[in-house]
Length: 432
Image (cartoon, rainbow, N blue to C red):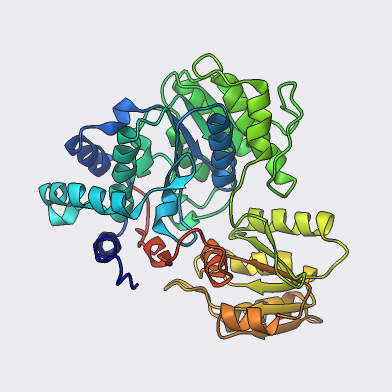
């Protein structure tokens, strides 16, 4: 990671990178203590807290766009970042500046000495408190606040929001959240707070039963959202994929629930949805010469099924070249089964991560799922893109890390320098 022209920023990023050594300790004690040491900035802010397996980022982007279109100063906290660490903390969709990162790290660093080594705040805990401090300083009128992992014991859960939003429940991160839908739902439902409205687009009866019970236990009014829940509006969103209609309905329902606290004009709601932008999720790029590249971080089974449905519905007239890379701890075998029939030519690549699945293992899985396809393990993403340079349509998918690398290689990143390694914090074996 080289930032010769910006040594102070480079040092701040290296410090954050060093926090990976502390892994991730699920629980709220450290985050609460660190937030208290910087003045409990969360008490000065209003939040919409968003959890779920898929669609969190897209729903957050929609909510941010709607409220910003209505004239509010809106903070946005999301993870992971695709290229630049600065993507995680935005105000009115402007990335936090390098200067502010340097300043916040310098202010928080001395506070970390208050913690014993075996209870040192983790990367995500520190970044969460940095975001809270920055949003309070920026006098954000609302913060759209995405969970990192799970919800119940996630560092973001120290806030009391205006509304708790749960997009959906699906299998992902089972090694930490639990091996059943019920257990995963219980972790996501952990963001529900006493008396605070909760909204969900989940429809599976087993997951919904868990959310309903937690809502009852907290006396939290529950709104169940379906795609048809448009509240007399006919919204359209710039984000591709039919699954985004449900995310849009969920965002709309949230705005409706909060109308008394934060009134939003109907035309601003529609304008905000129509203009929403969220990179790396069914993002279509047209290159000089006419080649189209679709980037989508379909890193679990539900995401792969949404990608397949979109390709079959909206790109049925062309067979894409598929470039696929995945993390080893994902359910890549099932994802390969879902995506393999869509392409006649498939390149598998390693992801720039210590946790990457092997390209040859992935190639074997694709070949098994679709023996007639031409499947090739490439040395890296650059080689696969180069080998496909004359193809009319390419799909790059399997991991948000891979999508971030593609954005960087294609010169489409909002940042000058990649900091994707900061996504590589180490997780514990179980949640306590």
